[in-house]
Length: 200
Image 1 (tube, helix red, strand yellow):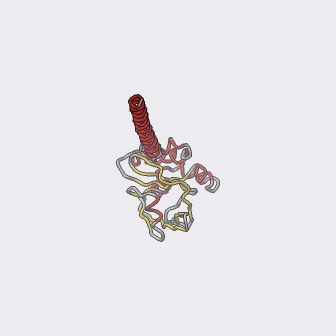
Image 2 (cartoon, one colour):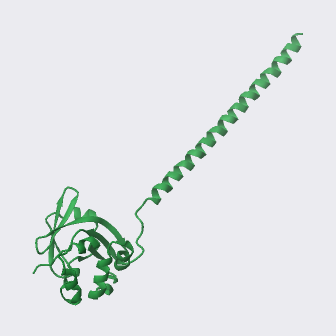
Image 3 (cartoon, one colour):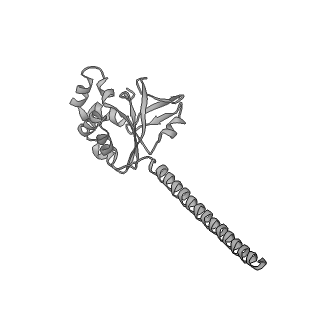
C-alpha cells in the first residue's frame, strides 16, 4: 500500500513538473512574441518618421517655380527678360519670388510697361530678387538688420520681427516672406507678397 502511494506520488510530481515546464515554455514564447511585435512597431514608427522628411528637389529654380502654380507671372517675366537660362544654371541661387498676387498688386499698367521692355527695367527688377548661394529660412532669421547684395548689384535689407521676415527694397517698401524653403536642384525659393524695386 505504501509502495502504491509512493508511485502515485512520483507520477503526480512528474506531471506537475511537466506542467510547470510547459508554462515556462509558453511564457518564453509569449515573451519572444511580444519582443518581436515591439521591434516591428519600432521599425514601423522609424519608417514613418523617415518618410515625413522634406521632399527632395526634382527641378531647377525655373522648373520648380513653374510646377508650384503660384509663380506663373514670374516665370513668364523671366522668359521675357531672357533670365531663364541664368536661373537654370548651376547656381546655387536663392530667389525671393513674388507670387502671382504680388504682381497683380502692382499699380495699374506697370506690369504691362515692364513687359514692353523686358530686357530693361524688368530684367533689373527680376535680378534684384535673386542672391547667390543657398540661403535657407533659418539663415534669414538670423540676418536682422543686414543688407544683402543681389544679382542685380543693388541691396535690400532684412528685418525680422518675431517669426515674421520682411525685406526692405530700394524704394523703402517692406515686403513680407510668406513661404520658405521651396527646394530646387540649384538653390531655393522663398515666396514673397510683393515685388521689390531696386534703388533708383
